[in-house]
Length: 467
Image 1 (cartoon, rainbow, N blue to C red):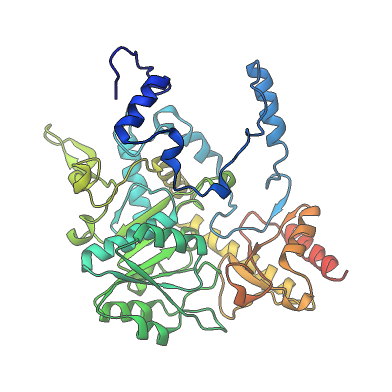
Image 2 (cartoon, rainbow, N blue to C red):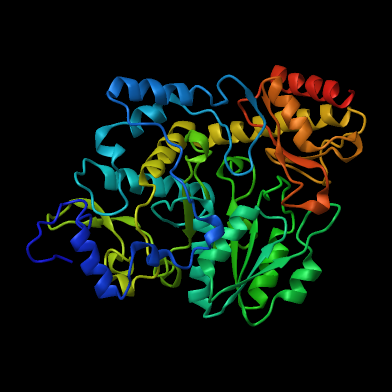
C-alpha cells in the first residue's frame, strides 16, 4: 500500500509512522498491538529482549558465532547411538563433491536460474530410487519423510474420494502430528493398536477399524522402533479388500537386503533419503520421496515435480523435462494445484542419486548386511547385562531396537546424562512418547559403528547401572 507524498523503502515500506497510521485506519485498528490481540497477555514479553549489542566488525561477529558453535556436542567427538529418524551413516566424499558444484548447489524445486544438467541429474536420481523400491515413478524430493507420508495419504484420499486414514500407534509421534496437521481438517487419522509382544500391527484391530471410509492404511517397514513388519502382505490385503490404498514408509538403507514394499502389496511408497549420502546436519539433512506405479490415477495426483525423457523438435534428439507439469501448484494456477508445493529438497535428491550410483546393488546389500550384523552384536551384548533387555520386542530388527531399562532402577534420562559425560550419545528416550513402554530407549547401530564403539557403550552402561 503506497501513501501519496511518501517514498516507500524497498524492504521496509511501512516503517514511517504516518504510513503505519494510514494502514491501521484502513484495517480498522488503533495500534500495531491490535494485530496480535489474540495472543494471551501471559505469554507476551513485557521488557526488552536480553540480546547483545551489535558487533562493530565482521571479525568480531564471526569470532562470537564460532565461540557459540564450539559449545555444540557433535558426533565427530562423541560416539552416537541416537537415530529415530535422522541416522548417522557414512557419506562418501563423492556425494559432497558433486552436491557442492555451483550448477547443483542452488537446485531449487521451481524453475532454475541456470541449468547445466540438473534435469538429467534429477531424472537419474528418480530412476535409481525407482529401481531400489521396485516402482516406476518417483518425485523430486519433498522436505522430509513426514511431509512425504502426509502427501502420500492425501494422494490416496483424492484417488479413493475417502476421508479416513489408518496408521500404527507405534509410529514417530512427531511424524504423526505432522501428518495430522497436514491432513486436517478434512482427513481423519485413526491409530491402530499393536501386539504387545512383537510390536507388530494388531490385525484384528485393523480389521475392526478399516471400513468403506478408509482411504489408506499407512505402515512402516522397518517400523519407527526398528522391528520388521512381517505382516505386510496381510495388511495390504486388508486395505485392498476395503477398497483402500496401501501406503508403506520405508528406510531405503534396508532395501539392499529386505524385499521392497511392492512385494507385499504397497501402492504408494514413501520415506527419507537422508541415509543415502546425506549428513545429519543437526537434523536438517532430511528429504522425503514418494514412489508409485506408472498409472495415470497415481501420476496425476503427485503434487510435486516429475522428470521424464521426451523427444525434442530435433529428430532423434531427446531431452529431460517435466511430466504433466500443469498438475503442480507452480505449473498452473495455485488454486488448481493438487497441493501447494514450494521449495523442494532437489539438491538432496541429486545427492541420493550419486550415493546409489556409487554403491550399486552389491554395495547396498553389503550395507544392509553390515548394519544387521552390528546391531545384532549390540543387542546380544546388552542382553548379557543384568536388568536390561537388549530388544524389548521379539522378532527381527533392522538398524534400530528398543532397549528396556525398567529393571535397572534408573531412568533413561539419568542413563543418557551419564553416557554423555563419557562421550556417548545414548538412545532416544521413549518414556514421554510411549509411556506404556516405561523406561525404554530407541538405540541405533549403523555401518559406522565399530566393535570397539559398541563395547565401550556396553561397559559404560554396566558401570552406570551398577552405581
